[in-house]
Length: 599
Image 1: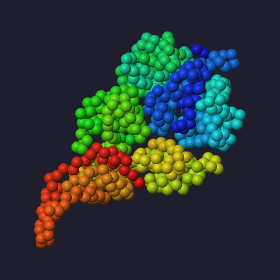
Image 2 (image 1 turned 120 degrees about the vertical axis):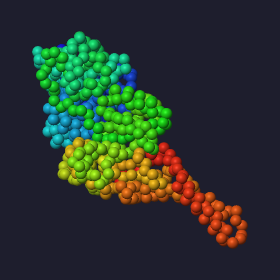
Image 3 (image 1 turned 30 degrees about the horizontal axis):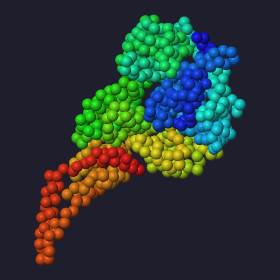
Image 4 (image 1 turned 135 degrees about the horizontal axis):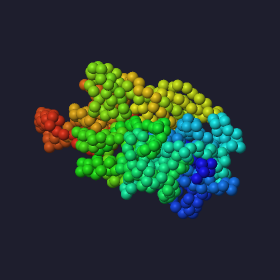
């Protein structure tokens, strides 16, 4: 295939701006799928993706389109839109020469649109601006056009206006992709160099690697190697990416396709790695490869202890398809055996929990999420802690460093005050304010990740009536006054409920957790103290009063001392029972702690 007639492009957009729907229209017009049949959002093949209206895994597909008497090959490399999957987005962008920037005419430009646009520009991609949802009654086409002109510096006639839902003007978009987006510039005679932009596990064939060829060519039977680990494999099958795989003799420079080479684990074929020939390959890898870095950690335990073996098997299978999931075994006095897992973010955590329950039918409970703290001890050692149980004694700590995120919030000007108040409550440091237009503003903050992961996004949507959007990026580890808060039930520490937070938040968070527990733990025959403690210091307390049995009910008349004697006897019994009695903590209590308000 001549490279002049190849276009590798992606669609970048904020969540729910119509990316998957537009992909459906492109596939229908290029006759990859039937125009009348099939499911909506073809590239979102997980039930979860369709339900949540998001793309979790990046996808790719090959289409052909006739333009000016020539047949063009269009490789659409679909990307996730959520901030948790920004590394996957960056690798998909690195596989393309052009990007379709899709903006919702009703919502305008939002935080992740901007973030992904900057990623595209960093990768030197040509950007084709497209306004979607022009059929909506509340579509502000002129306002959105004005925003795009300001941000990208395009002329009004260069902006394509479409409706992905109805298919209006989508043919014009296909023509524009052929006309305006650049062709690949690979050199066929150079040693092969291919970028892995996605990989997944197939039960029957092992790992399927999706690649973009930059230079040279690869064919069936070639011996290949991966740069990150120097492992060598033989190509068993190679071909194009249709709705089903289309086997070919080989792939040449500029093309995108798949390789099956008897790779056993997804972790061996990581996204962003470079493939070349084992002998006579290219001397250096393509830039930008990173190991996935978990940002949020949580303990995952089976609700029923007998499900532990099933959970072990389920997590191992899930890991085959998700190389960014990190886990290790963990034991908890309260919850039994389980796993401490690392996730890219809160959405990733939610998706893994849902998939474990839906695909493997294992009901689980997750402990309070935490982040990765760098702790400098007085003896000169540095340790990394992401589990509250491992937090050292305060007397041994010299300094605690927590991850700080560079946060961008885009919001209508009417809600600036609400957002500033919320960010201030979450220890945000304002860096600058940028007016996008007369109606919307971008606020830039430096904010601790521990303050973002709980319910910051929900609160952000609440105080802005759903109009605010957010994006964040790791900035640095910064010294902070962080403490571990233990939850004590009747004087006994419950390790699964411990959490790490800033010292200023310890009382409020501790009070919230103890009050939540007092509502869900049933009354016992003795009084139960629920306490939040930092070391030996109690910072918050709630009490569950004892169930009352009226022991004086059988006393009719007589001296008051008879009643007093019975009440004293009951008091002694309750005191003895408190010393030897066990508090029954139901599973709902652990779930309630996760939902406790973290103001």
